[in-house]
Length: 144
Image 1 (tube, helix red, strand yellow):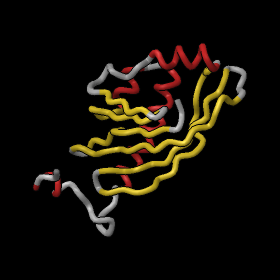
Image 2 (tube, helix red, strand yellow):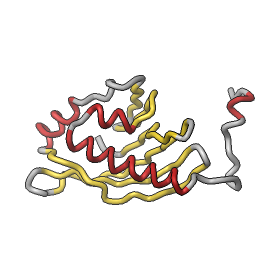
Image 3 (tube, one colour):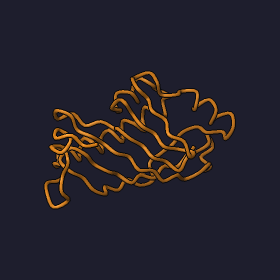
Image 4 (cartoon, one colour):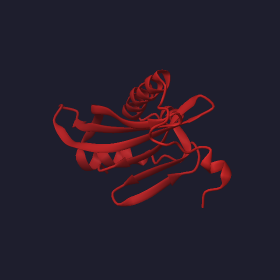
């Protein structure tokens, strides 16, 4: 149930959008995210995320309550099972926003070391703002 404080943080679609600076920050965070992911850098990934952080994937919902909860064994499993070496953004598309939230449709490709493609996956990434600080709050992916 929405309390009166919650209603203050809702926005009619006819109202304001994310600032240019906010959009640039979200897109920079996407670059930082992919770089940290490819380094298997949990601290770097945590630096991009807002907690609690929600991830919907493989028909499951995961909630990472605090930094350090991101399951880094995923990289080992992907390497062993699929030969995963690295990932790259295929597409980053801004969808919609308010002054405090932005939705991006992203697509990434997973590669083996020889450059062959494992798969191409669509996702929705949601960024939120808190006191001028934008972070990745929620991910919904069709990938593993």
